Length: 147
Image (cartoon, rainbow, N blue to C red; front, side, top):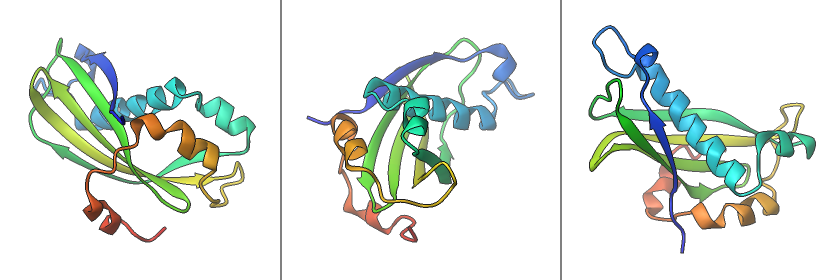
């Protein structure tokens, strides 16, 4: 049964903004780390994909900030794939502290070769991501349909 990949992170002091909250730009970095950790957990590390002439390139990010994280918080990054498209993947992620969702993010990653040319999503990638592929909401099909 599909589930979301989980990755724990501790918020560090140097990641804070002047208000003592996790800086908004760091959320994007932590979410990216969550995606990379998921890929590595299924044998699709970025260097391995690169050797096979594939790259996952972020083409769109939508992040919602719901509640702040502060220094010392341990947050859980949950990551899942909610849609495979002809030449891209749509990811959905959450940052959670205890029972509180702090932030959500949707990311569209295009599949390219190492020259940057858009290419079809390889079947071996689709198969490897099955444990973390969650088809929860068909409304996702309307999200950024220009691929």
